[in-house]
Length: 277
Image (cartoon, rainbow, N blue to C red; front, side):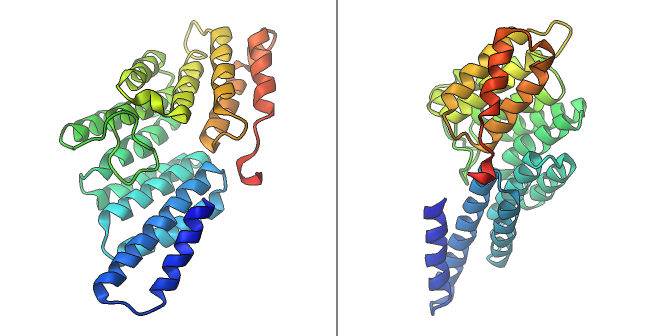
């Protein structure tokens, strides 16, 4: 993030100078992308006010240069910020606003699966989740997608592995354990999908959380998966990993007498608060 912020300052210095109208548009677009990246990174650090500020700047620049793809991407990042800030209705609203700018293009996939489906899952709308997930896969059929697990911070389209991973997360919210496991398997089994360590950790945490739901929960296996995933995440995990680890600890708390559950509780207590790092 410090590198991105430094680059953003350099671009700002250039913008305040003289350039042709064509170069000025290119500089403003670059500034918008850099502000958007900084906003996304701030979400990962758990600094939501800073993320929102960068996103406002990025969206303003995107509109100024009539870059609808960037505008849609920024709305998706604002949706992500609201999601991890716990405001699921705002997350849904921002994602749907982004669809206007996406106009059915590649960004519409991210907005449907990462924005709408996941927020609807947390709101308990099972039918809404299934519709949004289905729409994301339908859009993917007509798009040129990258292979493997596409970077979550990319300005490009989501890969099938990334779509499946987000579908798993969405169904965690509605307690559909079988669907979580199915989509997680799909995401992990695609060629190249194992190259993203943090994505792999998040998928494992989703599966572990799903195992705590339903009529026949498996808290011991769930907690063991959680401990293994958080250990792989390292000492300073991103905000999404921290939150999902703590959610898993809350869900397994009723079985705290099990050794694996007790270990998970201990591991999650050491996770650092993102914004205070």
